[in-house]
Image (cartoon, rainbow, N blue to C red; front, side):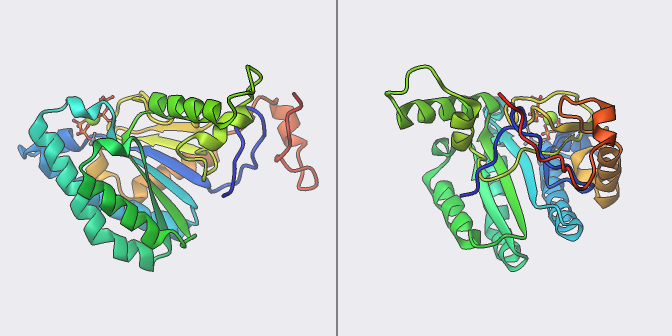
Length: 262
Ligand code: IPE
Ligand code: IPE
Ligand code: MG
């Protein structure tokens, strides 16, 4: 399995097109409310946006797309809405996996999946195995995911991997145990729906991501809106702690993929 170190230890190579885009898909409820529709109608339309975005990532050569579908805090919603969201998730998995597979998409689901119905857990496993050999795009769905849960479970696994080690743990010991150790950290984070917060999404992995917030509601987020986020990303100067002057001195002969000395 490919291991990616933390961007606080290594300076990743930055390219014009982000390798990894992570999105908080927000605003489904408000989209429905504006149209006097039930909230679930917004979630239905939101699935259509997921299809559009997967296609857009394939066309633009983006390698990793990570979508926050259900947070560990979303269980606090009314039970009917939680149940409808689960049904929608099951239906989307059943309907889409064939097409994802055909298009070279590898599907991964991260989060505390034990809390889900056993049938849904089995469906997730089957969908992941079916697409495991694909490499064009890795689509990660975060479901019952929380950034704090991820860090804690990684700490627990790290400690039990070497109980004798004592206290000399490094970042590099922890990162292989994070739920998304198979992916580089997100280059670009997008949140739709106007809120400017992380809502317990990828807390560790967003340390050096470029953040982009838009008022556009998720059901209305289309490839044009996505391109606006990509253009904004292209204008950012990713310094990873260095100065602007250092960056302008970086040439092809001295790429950015350098190691920070401890
Ligand atoms: C995001 O849309 C979808 C999920 C959290 C599952 P919301 O349902 O949060 O929509 P708003 O924020 O109420 O508009
Ligand atoms: C965050 O959206 C989680 C998902 C998009 C799945 P919420 O709409 O639940 O976030 P908060 O609670 O308003 O911050
Ligand atoms: Mg919301």
